[in-house]
Amino acid sequence: MTETTDSISFKRLKMQCRRGMLELDVLLEPFLADVYLTLEEEDKQRFVNLLTCEDQDLFPWFMQSAVPEDPDHARIVNIIVSRVQPENYRA
Image 1 (cartoon, rainbow, N blue to C red):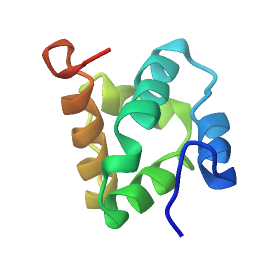
Image 2: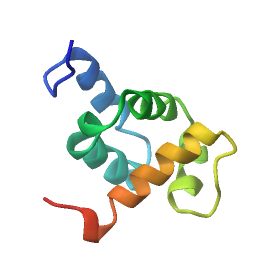
Image 3: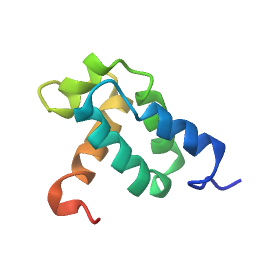
């Protein structure tokens, strides 16, 4: 079954993207809305796994002041950071 923005799993992810930090919300929510459905299945799973991390871990990764030790986390963080750069964002 193909995932869509109307699917239950996508709606759950949307709720999980709402974090306790605005800085994370403005990265994760647009990424989910604009990019997630275009990812390969492995990267989709990496994103789902990333959402289980604590905000205090995610914040330095996205601010690029630290790199995740887990290579899967590092890969999806890199994808998110590169996709949300202003020159790559299409509203």
